[in-house]
Image 1: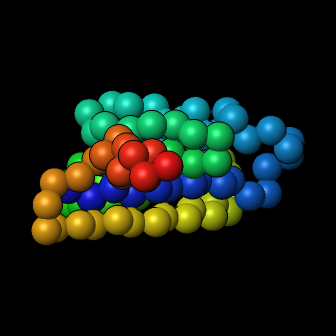
Image 2: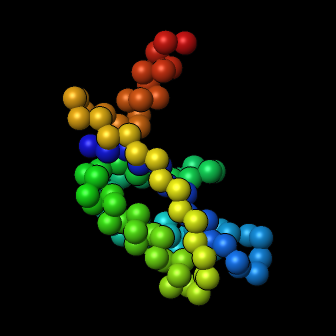
Length: 98
């Protein structure tokens, strides 16, 4: 299972608030059925990497569908294949060492 952090940033929009566009991208993710966690700086998605890639592309495209002229999407992938993992397990591992 992959853990992916994604941040979709619409550029060239008339207002400094981006929450309307972010909410549109998050609706795409919500309908995908993938596990996710919204944070203040991005969204963490867990699941099969092929499925996550498809959804990240749809999230990116959702801004264009709203008339945005340019979109900057950043993606960070943790694809560990030697044992199962999750965002919660990663956090717990660090917290246990404190």
